[in-house]
Image (tube, rainbow, N blue to C red; front, top):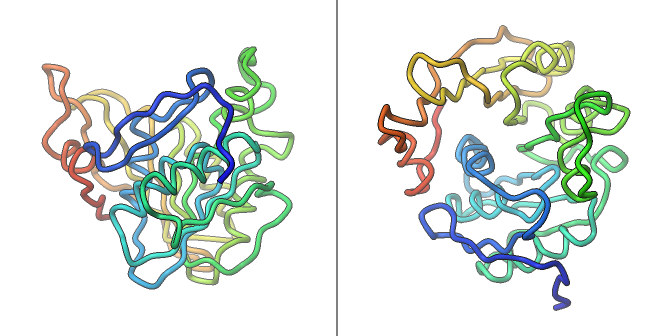
Length: 245
Protein backbone atom coordinates (compact mmCIF):
# COMPACT_ATOMS: atom_id res chain seq x y z
CA UNK A 1 0.00 0.00 0.00
CA UNK A 2 1.21 3.48 -0.87
CA UNK A 3 2.28 5.41 2.23
CA UNK A 4 1.52 9.03 3.01
CA UNK A 5 4.40 11.47 2.60
CA UNK A 6 3.09 13.73 5.37
CA UNK A 7 5.33 14.29 8.38
CA UNK A 8 3.43 12.46 11.12
CA UNK A 9 3.47 11.42 14.72
CA UNK A 10 2.05 8.09 15.85
CA UNK A 11 -0.12 8.49 18.92
CA UNK A 12 -2.25 6.30 21.12
CA UNK A 13 -5.92 7.16 21.66
CA UNK A 14 -8.79 5.36 23.36
CA UNK A 15 -6.50 4.18 26.13
CA UNK A 16 -3.91 3.09 23.52
CA UNK A 17 -6.43 0.73 21.95
CA UNK A 18 -5.94 2.70 18.74
CA UNK A 19 -2.69 3.72 17.07
CA UNK A 20 -3.19 6.92 15.11
CA UNK A 21 -0.73 8.41 12.64
CA UNK A 22 -1.58 12.09 12.17
CA UNK A 23 0.15 15.11 10.65
CA UNK A 24 2.66 17.06 12.71
CA UNK A 25 1.22 20.25 11.17
CA UNK A 26 -2.44 20.94 10.62
CA UNK A 27 -5.54 19.45 12.21
CA UNK A 28 -4.83 16.91 14.96
CA UNK A 29 -7.29 14.71 16.80
CA UNK A 30 -8.11 15.48 20.42
CA UNK A 31 -11.09 14.09 22.36
CA UNK A 32 -13.88 15.17 19.98
CA UNK A 33 -13.66 12.16 17.60
CA UNK A 34 -13.51 9.75 20.55
CA UNK A 35 -16.68 11.25 22.05
CA UNK A 36 -18.38 11.30 18.67
CA UNK A 37 -17.71 7.63 18.01
CA UNK A 38 -18.93 6.72 21.49
CA UNK A 39 -22.31 8.34 20.77
CA UNK A 40 -23.23 6.38 17.61
CA UNK A 41 -26.07 3.93 18.46
CA UNK A 42 -25.12 1.25 15.93
CA UNK A 43 -25.86 -2.47 16.17
CA UNK A 44 -24.00 -5.45 14.66
CA UNK A 45 -24.56 -5.74 10.92
CA UNK A 46 -25.31 -2.04 10.41
CA UNK A 47 -23.44 0.41 8.20
CA UNK A 48 -21.99 3.76 9.23
CA UNK A 49 -20.61 6.68 7.24
CA UNK A 50 -17.96 8.90 8.83
CA UNK A 51 -18.35 12.20 6.95
CA UNK A 52 -15.10 14.16 6.81
CA UNK A 53 -12.90 11.58 8.51
CA UNK A 54 -9.52 13.40 8.39
CA UNK A 55 -6.90 10.86 9.45
CA UNK A 56 -9.66 8.49 10.57
CA UNK A 57 -9.76 8.92 14.36
CA UNK A 58 -13.54 8.66 14.86
CA UNK A 59 -13.91 5.77 12.41
CA UNK A 60 -11.09 3.87 14.12
CA UNK A 61 -12.61 4.39 17.57
CA UNK A 62 -16.00 3.17 16.37
CA UNK A 63 -14.44 0.13 14.68
CA UNK A 64 -12.70 -0.78 17.93
CA UNK A 65 -15.83 -0.33 20.07
CA UNK A 66 -18.23 -2.12 17.70
CA UNK A 67 -16.53 -5.04 15.91
CA UNK A 68 -19.76 -6.12 14.19
CA UNK A 69 -20.35 -3.00 12.10
CA UNK A 70 -19.13 -1.90 8.67
CA UNK A 71 -17.81 1.65 8.27
CA UNK A 72 -17.17 3.80 5.23
CA UNK A 73 -15.28 7.05 5.74
CA UNK A 74 -15.10 9.91 3.24
CA UNK A 75 -12.36 12.55 3.13
CA UNK A 76 -11.90 15.26 0.51
CA UNK A 77 -8.15 15.82 1.09
CA UNK A 78 -6.15 13.12 -0.74
CA UNK A 79 -3.20 13.10 1.65
CA UNK A 80 -5.47 12.66 4.67
CA UNK A 81 -7.52 9.96 2.94
CA UNK A 82 -4.29 8.05 2.28
CA UNK A 83 -3.25 8.48 5.90
CA UNK A 84 -6.64 7.20 7.08
CA UNK A 85 -6.14 4.07 4.96
CA UNK A 86 -2.76 3.55 6.62
CA UNK A 87 -4.40 3.88 10.02
CA UNK A 88 -7.07 1.34 9.12
CA UNK A 89 -4.30 -1.10 8.17
CA UNK A 90 -2.18 -0.39 11.26
CA UNK A 91 -5.15 -1.22 13.48
CA UNK A 92 -6.29 -4.27 11.52
CA UNK A 93 -9.60 -2.84 10.28
CA UNK A 94 -9.09 -3.09 6.51
CA UNK A 95 -11.87 -5.67 6.08
CA UNK A 96 -14.62 -3.47 7.55
CA UNK A 97 -13.38 0.12 7.33
CA UNK A 98 -13.23 1.59 3.82
CA UNK A 99 -11.73 5.04 3.22
CA UNK A 100 -13.09 6.87 0.18
CA UNK A 101 -11.53 10.02 -1.22
CA UNK A 102 -14.28 12.39 -2.31
CA UNK A 103 -16.58 15.31 -1.56
CA UNK A 104 -19.46 14.56 0.79
CA UNK A 105 -21.46 17.43 -0.69
CA UNK A 106 -21.49 16.02 -4.22
CA UNK A 107 -21.83 12.27 -3.69
CA UNK A 108 -24.38 11.34 -1.00
CA UNK A 109 -26.10 7.96 -1.35
CA UNK A 110 -29.07 7.10 0.87
CA UNK A 111 -27.74 3.73 1.99
CA UNK A 112 -26.35 4.08 5.52
CA UNK A 113 -27.98 3.17 8.84
CA UNK A 114 -25.99 5.87 10.65
CA UNK A 115 -23.87 8.89 9.78
CA UNK A 116 -21.41 10.48 12.18
CA UNK A 117 -19.59 13.72 11.57
CA UNK A 118 -17.33 16.32 13.14
CA UNK A 119 -17.93 19.20 10.68
CA UNK A 120 -15.61 22.16 10.22
CA UNK A 121 -16.36 24.62 13.02
CA UNK A 122 -16.10 27.89 11.09
CA UNK A 123 -18.17 29.49 8.33
CA UNK A 124 -16.33 31.14 5.43
CA UNK A 125 -16.87 34.64 6.83
CA UNK A 126 -15.76 33.80 10.37
CA UNK A 127 -12.39 34.50 11.96
CA UNK A 128 -8.94 34.56 10.42
CA UNK A 129 -8.11 31.67 8.12
CA UNK A 130 -5.16 29.51 9.14
CA UNK A 131 -2.07 29.83 6.91
CA UNK A 132 -1.91 26.01 6.91
CA UNK A 133 -4.05 24.83 3.98
CA UNK A 134 -4.84 21.47 5.54
CA UNK A 135 -5.95 23.01 8.83
CA UNK A 136 -7.98 25.64 6.96
CA UNK A 137 -9.80 22.96 4.94
CA UNK A 138 -10.56 21.00 8.11
CA UNK A 139 -11.82 24.00 10.09
CA UNK A 140 -13.69 26.15 7.53
CA UNK A 141 -16.91 25.16 5.75
CA UNK A 142 -17.38 25.96 2.08
CA UNK A 143 -19.98 28.38 0.73
CA UNK A 144 -22.85 25.94 1.43
CA UNK A 145 -22.16 26.33 5.14
CA UNK A 146 -23.37 24.14 7.97
CA UNK A 147 -26.79 23.72 6.33
CA UNK A 148 -25.17 22.16 3.27
CA UNK A 149 -23.02 19.81 5.34
CA UNK A 150 -25.95 18.59 7.45
CA UNK A 151 -28.13 18.24 4.35
CA UNK A 152 -25.52 16.02 2.68
CA UNK A 153 -25.22 13.86 5.81
CA UNK A 154 -28.99 13.39 5.96
CA UNK A 155 -29.08 12.57 2.23
CA UNK A 156 -26.68 9.67 2.90
CA UNK A 157 -29.05 8.10 5.44
CA UNK A 158 -31.82 5.60 5.01
CA UNK A 159 -35.21 6.68 6.36
CA UNK A 160 -35.15 6.41 10.16
CA UNK A 161 -31.36 6.36 10.28
CA UNK A 162 -29.44 8.49 12.77
CA UNK A 163 -27.13 11.43 12.25
CA UNK A 164 -24.75 11.99 15.16
CA UNK A 165 -22.57 15.08 15.16
CA UNK A 166 -20.30 17.01 17.51
CA UNK A 167 -20.17 20.76 17.11
CA UNK A 168 -19.98 24.14 18.82
CA UNK A 169 -22.64 24.70 21.46
CA UNK A 170 -23.32 28.19 20.10
CA UNK A 171 -24.41 26.61 16.81
CA UNK A 172 -27.29 24.59 18.25
CA UNK A 173 -29.89 26.94 16.72
CA UNK A 174 -28.34 26.48 13.27
CA UNK A 175 -28.21 22.70 13.67
CA UNK A 176 -31.85 22.38 14.70
CA UNK A 177 -32.91 24.73 11.89
CA UNK A 178 -31.06 22.53 9.37
CA UNK A 179 -33.04 19.51 10.63
CA UNK A 180 -36.39 21.24 10.02
CA UNK A 181 -38.66 19.08 7.86
CA UNK A 182 -35.90 16.51 7.32
CA UNK A 183 -35.08 14.97 10.70
CA UNK A 184 -36.33 15.04 14.26
CA UNK A 185 -36.36 13.29 17.62
CA UNK A 186 -33.17 15.29 18.18
CA UNK A 187 -31.28 14.79 21.43
CA UNK A 188 -28.88 17.55 22.53
CA UNK A 189 -26.07 16.18 24.68
CA UNK A 190 -23.96 18.95 26.27
CA UNK A 191 -20.28 18.39 27.03
CA UNK A 192 -19.55 20.41 30.16
CA UNK A 193 -15.84 21.29 30.63
CA UNK A 194 -16.47 21.54 34.41
CA UNK A 195 -19.59 21.29 36.55
CA UNK A 196 -21.29 24.67 36.54
CA UNK A 197 -19.43 25.95 33.45
CA UNK A 198 -21.09 26.61 30.07
CA UNK A 199 -20.79 23.89 27.45
CA UNK A 200 -18.57 24.74 24.49
CA UNK A 201 -19.32 21.53 22.61
CA UNK A 202 -22.50 19.51 22.13
CA UNK A 203 -23.25 16.16 20.59
CA UNK A 204 -26.53 16.18 18.67
CA UNK A 205 -28.32 13.13 17.34
CA UNK A 206 -31.43 13.08 15.16
CA UNK A 207 -33.33 10.59 13.00
CA UNK A 208 -34.07 11.12 9.34
CA UNK A 209 -37.77 11.41 8.55
CA UNK A 210 -38.85 11.25 12.21
CA UNK A 211 -40.50 14.56 12.99
CA UNK A 212 -40.67 14.34 16.79
CA UNK A 213 -39.72 17.06 19.33
CA UNK A 214 -36.16 17.66 20.51
CA UNK A 215 -34.95 17.04 24.06
CA UNK A 216 -31.95 18.10 26.12
CA UNK A 217 -29.94 15.38 27.89
CA UNK A 218 -28.09 16.07 31.16
CA UNK A 219 -24.84 15.51 29.23
CA UNK A 220 -21.33 14.71 30.44
CA UNK A 221 -18.98 16.65 32.73
CA UNK A 222 -15.50 16.18 31.30
CA UNK A 223 -13.16 17.46 34.03
CA UNK A 224 -13.06 17.42 37.81
CA UNK A 225 -11.96 20.47 39.87
CA UNK A 226 -8.36 19.18 39.96
CA UNK A 227 -8.18 19.28 36.15
CA UNK A 228 -8.31 15.55 35.48
CA UNK A 229 -11.04 13.71 33.63
CA UNK A 230 -14.10 12.64 35.58
CA UNK A 231 -14.70 8.92 36.03
CA UNK A 232 -17.57 9.11 33.55
CA UNK A 233 -15.33 10.77 30.96
CA UNK A 234 -12.51 8.25 31.58
CA UNK A 235 -14.94 5.42 30.85
CA UNK A 236 -15.48 6.88 27.39
CA UNK A 237 -12.04 8.26 26.54
CA UNK A 238 -9.79 5.54 28.00
CA UNK A 239 -11.96 2.44 28.26
CA UNK A 240 -13.98 2.57 25.00
CA UNK A 241 -17.32 2.97 26.74
CA UNK A 242 -20.46 4.06 24.92
CA UNK A 243 -22.34 7.31 25.43
CA UNK A 244 -25.89 6.07 25.86
CA UNK A 245 -28.66 8.61 25.34
